[in-house]
Length: 98
Image 1 (spheres, rainbow, N blue to C red):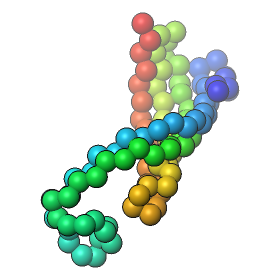
Image 2: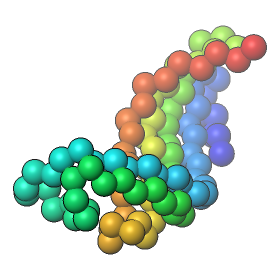
Image 3: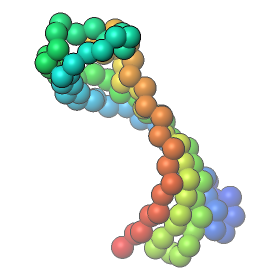
């Protein structure tokens, strides 16, 4: 969803969900990470549900380009590691449409 604040400025937000595929390989484990795997050199793969949300602000440079800043949050739900895996991204973006 986009909201035009003025002729050149626009704010956006969005949310969604999906599936994440994780492939984790561990060469060594050093305490106190708290990550529990069966042994060093082990590997796991799994698919889990994901939710995400984003917000930001863009400045229109021309009809084909804009510059902006934003924030994106993504959470991988109910992993086999016993916890959610959350990601926070702070974005500096340039968009070119052709």
